[in-house]
Amino acid sequence: MIPLILFTAACRKPVSKTLPVEDTRFLMDTVVRIAVYDPGISRTQAEEAIREAFRAMETLEKTVSSHMPDNDIARLNAAPGGVFQAVSPETAFLLETAGIVAGETGGAFDVSIGAVRAEWSFDAETPSVPDSAAILKRLSCVDYRQIQLSGQQARLARPSMAVDLGGIAKGLNIDRAVEVLKAAGVRSGLVDAGGDMRIFGKHPRNPGWRIGVKHPRPREKSLYGVIETGPAGIATSGDYERFFLSGGRRYHHILDPGTGFPAEGCVSVTLLAESAMLADAYATAVFVLGPDEGMRLIERKPGLEGMIILEKNGRLTHRISSGLESKIQF
Image (tube, rainbow, N blue to C red; front, side, top):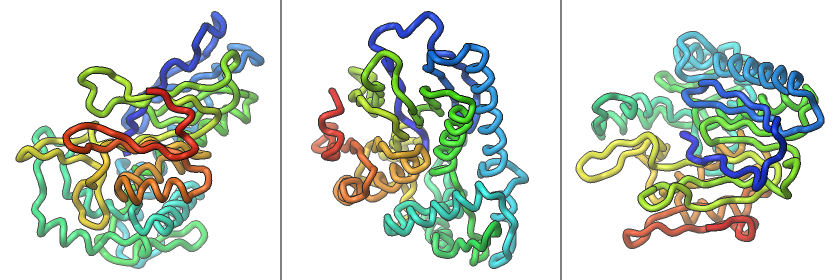
């Protein structure tokens, strides 16, 4: 999932001349910002905590990224079908959590989509629509139930299966960075990975944190709305970041595991959850499920709130979960 939410206007008035203490680095194919808003620790402590958080993120990315040549995911995907491979505790946790989300969403979120994703060339200089027969062949390899775990070992039951943790790993990496900050004594701050983020603690001056939701078709304004929230994990799945046009149709990177082609019905989904990892995964699932079934999932799943933007009669409109209605401004 490409994060499509912007952190804006966290403070309505200056907190102090020294806050936030922050730094940015390029990780996980995006700009990551870590900011500390805690006036109770020194700048030196905050800077060291931020460095430790970045180190933790770098380590986890090397372990679970689908784009690294020699890590858990590369070895798992390269192994013969049915052969167990040793994986790290973090990889095992991601695969286990991905399986739970897949089961709860009827497979709308499925990390075994990696087999189909290999047919798409969203990052190519001249991307093109893959052959339908090739997609259909690859679909036989998409089935989260065929990803099997035994302790810290994992296997793909069928040959040619491939795991892609892009829809959940970034969220976990954000959560791990927050854990490092908290362990260092930081009581409030945020980790923002290109828009997918985790906010923790209280803002030192304001009653809440204000999060700007990027407008998916920004012709007139850059923000679609602003959400005021307390501590939360936040993620957005949208059709407007990694995409190409062909034959007058938009082809985006959020693939439907049932068809192998881009999911239809939603323009963007912004989700709030208790962790960035869960927000990351469920935002993808809701996007794939579509506006009706997706909102039903949000409403019945404890801890989830969200907004779905869709197009109707050539115009954008939205649906908001009951717990979020009073917290969003347009």
